[in-house]
Image 1 (spheres, rainbow, N blue to C red):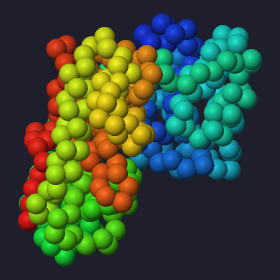
Image 2: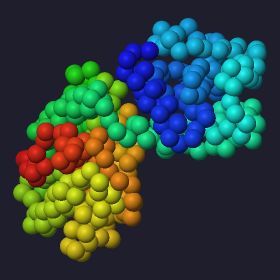
Image 3: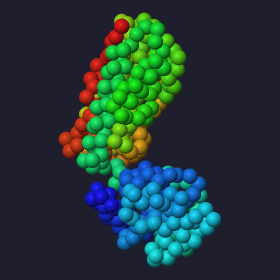
Image 4: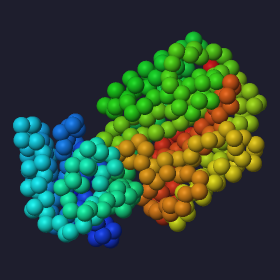
Length: 365
């Protein structure tokens, strides 16, 4: 294993000790990618990395073993389709010498039949998911993750800038999305998602890009993200094609106040609920609280959505290295929606915004 993944495995074992966890079982998910750099093919064939305080070993389908050996030096016990996984799993568990009634941390993103298979082989196990082990480690990003996130947001900034600069009357939402996709391809990035909303479509928080055409005096909302160096970007910017209405300007200002308040509240030691409240209080005071039904933000890392959530009432304490979105919005059905979004990494003195784009209203046309 490289020094990065060796360090992560060592850190995992410290978390296992702290949480009295005897065994960590990781499936072919982003948890495994984060821990080992390995991204094995995932289907109905059980594949798991089983980690104890002293040993780590893969249960690996023989069909996929040779390709995966190129990427890790951790040991494999393989099984063929004719043999089935039971004997191979039992062999690994014998080597692990688990205590009676072991506590197992299961990968919550792993197929449930993999988890049930493992639990069926153990004597009186208890289990939890990854919140105290890998999940806790992934919430705090290291330097390599920051570098990847910063670079993917740089590419995303280029795509968003070009998208707004290229707005023309008569083009469709899909036309804009196609341009964003082309920019991603130009920079060897993959599409994570692209949501383009014209006019009243912006009032749907999760609008699907369609064939709505751009006309004069129409709101434009673009929420998009690419994936580069294995990490995604996520950003929303809003503006107007033509001359913005007074009502749009008013709502835009409220949302800007809300995101600014949340950014100011995002400090190490603050709760995620307090950050949510900072944004929500502004929108509530302006009389639009009933339109803001979503949480204020979500964590981001290898997965587009991970912990910590920035959500009302949460007592999760934020810490340096956390990466999350702050994206309050006001959604007026039949009119328009405005959401302004930043992805931040929390530093000792507050949030560092990963995007370099201004949040000022974008006016084109």
